Structures are given as C-alpha cells and as structure tokens.
Amino acid sequence: MIARLIVPVVLIAALASCPRQAPLIRATDAPDLETAAILRGLVRDPADRDIVGLYARDTDRVCIVRRDGGYRIGATVDYGEGQGCSAAGDASRLGDALRVRLGNDCHFDAAFDGDRITFPAVLPEACATACVRSGTLAALDAERLSESVAEAATMRNADGRAPCAGS
Image 1 (cartoon, rainbow, N blue to C red):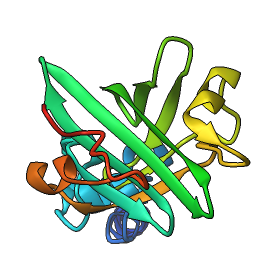
Image 2 (cartoon, one colour):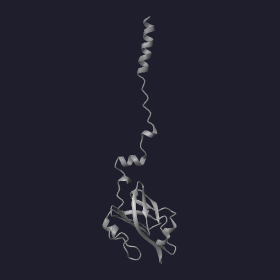
Image 3 (tube, rainbow, N blue to C red):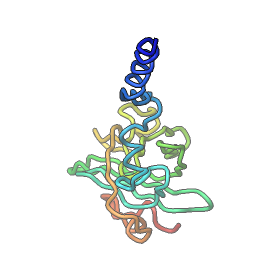
Image 4 (cartoon, rainbow, N blue to C red):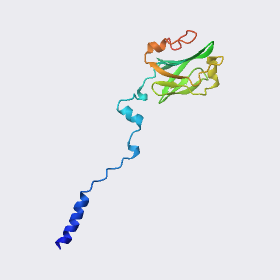
C-alpha cells in the first residue's frame, strides 16, 4: 500500500522538477530594429529633427529656414553650362515627408528621414518652369550638411541669388 502511494508522489515530484518552458515572445512584442536603435539612443529619431538646415549632394542643394510660422525652402541643381534649376517656396513637415510648394502649381511631397531630403522622380509639369535647358528638380537628393540657419540662408544658386535669404 505504501508503494502505491510512493509511486504517484515520486512522479509528481519528478514532473515538478522539470524545467518550465519560457513564455513565447510574439514578434509583435519586440520593436523593429530602427525603433530599438532610437529607444537606445543609437539613432536620432527623425520625428524629433527640425528640418531647418543646409542639405547638399553633388549638384543638388536645398536650404530650409523658418519664416512666418512655417518654413521657406530653396532648391537648386547646377549641371553647368547653363543647365540647372533654382526654385524657392514654402515647406511644411508631415511625419517622414515634407510638403513642398515651389510656386502656384509646383507642389509635391518629398521624402525626409531626418538627415536626407529626396524629391520624387516625377514632378508636376509646372516645376519645369524653375529649370533651364535640360535641368530638372526631379529626384533631387541631398543630405544634411548643417543645422545652421546662417549657412542655410547664405546658400547661393548658379546666378548668385540666395533663395533662403531675407527670412
């Protein structure tokens, strides 16, 4: 009779001593790599970056300064030999995009990741009026060089004008 009682007690004790399985972590519980890097301070959060500054890459240049509660943007592309574009207008931030208006009918959303501005590959036809010969603002791509308002305001186009000055 004691043997009959000992066997179940031993089995229960043996099962209780087995390691428990760790709780499963669902993929939705873990942040994506970029979010994890932002949370640890390894990468700046693009949502926290001010758009003011000077951006450039090769012949593409963009300046952004504050003006009248919003932002003034200037964009220039200089291919040399009289080919290029220069435009100025207004911009506003919409999450990871900039809403850009360079004249009455030249408006579009440009990608913005906190350090880089990329214009769409296809722009409204009205944007072509800012260009001479075969110049285009389409696919303009510029990386942040400076957050300085002074540097952004003194950026010059091929004609020597400063599209972000006077703000």
